[in-house]
Image (cartoon, rainbow, N blue to C red; front, top):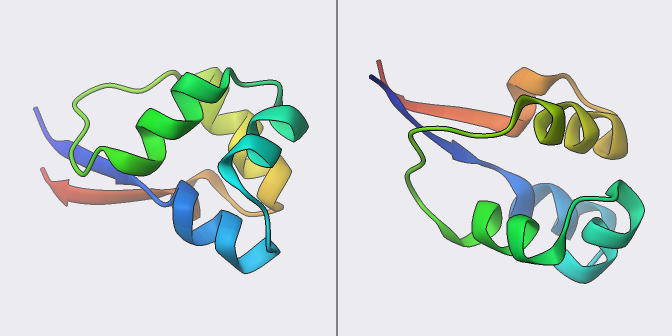
Length: 70
């Protein structure tokens, strides 16, 4: 199984938002947003959360996810 990294921190910085603001605007719990922003390798992620983040940042899901290994 491949590993991924979510670009939450970078996308939030581009918008000038804190992780708390990302949480509030997306409806994703802060603990989850913080985990996605800080963990450098994830094996699984909630697809609904990915959709919410992509919609919030106005980007494609592929722009939120960085594939580290396949």
